[in-house]
Image 1 (cartoon, helix red, strand yellow):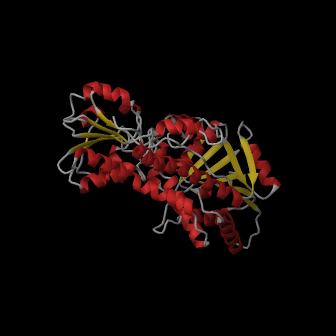
Image 2 (cartoon, helix red, strand yellow):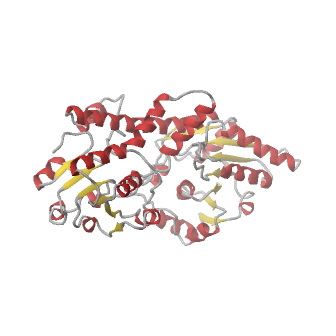
Image 3 (tube, helix red, strand yellow):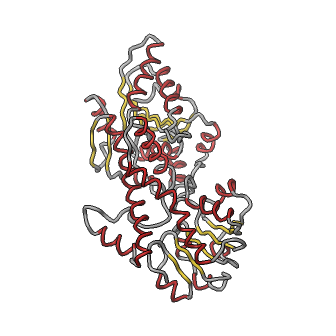
Length: 435
C-alpha cells in the first residue's frame, strides 16, 4: 500500500518507519520545513534507538520519503494517518488545533474515497467532530466523496517505540464500515497481535483508560511506599508479592519519584478536563494526579531531613530524562527536583547521557558533566533520578573517594541497598527501611 503519515514527530516518524519496514511505501509529511530537511538527512528531532539508521536505509530504497506537501501525496495514498501532536492547554484540555488543521486540509484536497486514520491521542468524541470537519470542507467544494475515519490509538513506549510499533501487544481499531475494517485487516495482516474492532468512541476511550490505569498503579505503589517507610516495611518486597498475583501483575509497581513524559501527564489532565465538562468527577484519577505531583517534593523532604539543610550543599543529580533510553524531559521529575533545590539555595551538578542539552535550555546556570563520576565530585549528596544503565553500573566504590559525604538517595530503587551499605554509603531508597 501507499500510506501518508501526516505529522513527522515521535509517533509519526516511528509509525512511518514501521510501515516502511513491512514493505509499504510511506510518505511522511510535516509542515515544519526544518524538521523535514533534517529527516531527509536521517537526523531525527528526538532520540530513539535504531530509528536513525533505518530512516537512512528506507529512504535509500524508496520505501520512505519526507515532504511538506500533502497535496502531492494525497492522490497517491489509499490510507492517510493523522499523527500530529495534541498538547495540553492551560485548563488541561487537549489542543486539537493541529488535528483540525490536517482534517480541513484533507477535506480540501481529497478527490476520491480514502481511509483516514486518527492515530493522534485525542479526547473521547473527537472522531465524530473531525468527521464533520472533513464533510464541511467537501461540501464547500460541492463534493460528496465517501471516506472512512478510523480511530487507531498508539500504545508506544518511549525508548521501545519501534519494537512496540513492529510487535504491538494489541491493535485497537475503531471503525464503522466493513470496507474500512477490510482495509485495516490488510494493513495489519502481518501482525500476530490481537486486533479489537470496536466503535471509534470506544477506541478513543481505550487509549485514555489504559494510560490512566497504568498511572494509577504507579501512584498507588508510590503512596504505599510512603506508608511502608513509616511502619518499617519494604515496598519493593510488597510489590514483588503483589505482582505474583496474575490479577494484578508486576508491571508499573516499581516505587519511585513519579511518572513523567509526554503521555501520562497530558492524557490524565485531558481526561479529567473532559470528565469535568461532563459533570462526572473522577475521584480516583484526581488522587493519582495529586500523589504524582507531590512525590518529588516528598522525596526531597527525605533528603532535607537527612542533610539537615539544603542551603549551600552541593547536590549531584544523576539522570534528567523522565525515563531511560529517551531524550524526553517533558514533565520529568528531575525538573521539579532542580527547581526545589535551587529554591533552597543548593548547588547542583548533573549528568544525563541524552537529556542534558534540553535541560540546559531551562536551567543554564547549573553544572553539567559528560560522565556520571564527574558529577559526584565534592558532592554532599547524590540523587539518582533516572535509572540509566551507565549510572547503575558506575564504579560506586571509586565514587566513594570522589564525594564529600556518602549520602545516596535512590529515587528509582535501582541500586542494591545492601551492596551500597557494604561500600560505606548512607543509602535511602523509596519505601524501604533506612540503611
